[in-house]
Image 1: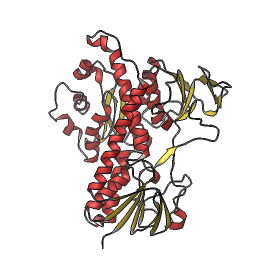
Image 2 (image 1 turned 90 degrees about the vertical axis):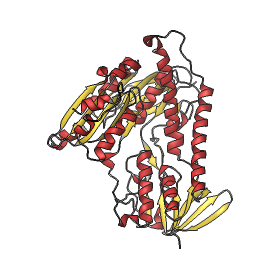
Image 3 (image 1 turned 30 degrees about the horizontal axis):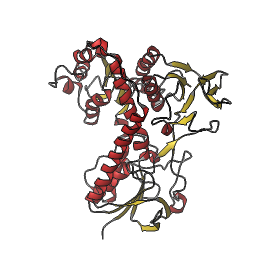
Image 4 (image 1 turned 180 degrees about the horizontal axis):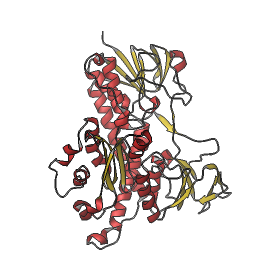
Length: 458
């Protein structure tokens, strides 16, 4: 009898687990209540990157004269942008639905609840559906966090999912939160011509990133006219009586400062979608943050019930969720008893789609110093790279962290054009324990941005 595998959540983790397990012979049922492909992916990640891509083209047209061209720049058509985003997400959702169908995965639209360790009930438009499961994967994702002091009205005070795109481009946007999501929104709306103020509660933007990387982004923000309100934590948002104009909202900070703008955007993290899943009925433990703790196999406190993606409390990256889903499928089907590599979260590459882009992987320079670990750090600026000069954007640098004794690549950071693509080379080097000499001795294309990687590896 085939393994009955029920997956709750159709995001990157759920889709990857479903298709892989089906290929391995499982009887797979996937339940999704919103959008196939994942709300975090198709309501957050993909729309934001589509908007950033549009802003990048606008910025390129503004730099046209520096590349030997003359003529008027492009302007933003909000309705066309909205249709473009809808077309992209619709195409991706359709591709996911087609993939699941091709693998024989049963898909049910509705809200799933655990009624016990092996029983799942789905409240669907067609009525209630009862499922018996030998294994269950919980991958219900997360939603934007809204603190008690903020009242979101989706007009003047927004969370991220209400800004893809917004009803109107703000004249002055106040962004609350200087992490990855916050800085992407700063860049996005500044490229569309909005005035932007960023409230930075700590001493730098991107508080958990390399200070040199954060400084490069801050310098670019300041050069583009972004106002940084440092050392302030937002504690309240007031909407003015008429709620219009440049002073439509007032963001109050704990140090007494009041930042006025036309709109306020909350980008202060996310909350796992664990409420209402019936975790108590199944005996699944949840931590104080609402996440489901997992072991190296993504198992919860109940051995046959797994968690992946944002719900697991690990890195909230689609790439991590997809890999977790694949690992769960293999574990459900018993493949972990053979040669099996555990997922190493410390070696996950990540990117921030600002301009210039930021990407990193593995051990950071500051982290190594904090651990008292000896490292070798090499750095090469893109201003010395021929392709960067040809493309008219030589901002940023490549930094590689390696072991001084063995030359093994431990990590790296890239600030610059297409950093999100270039980091793949360093990610492979970190995962495969390659040496800097392996990169330096590679025969790369010329002229290419990747040459900076080889030069930094020497």
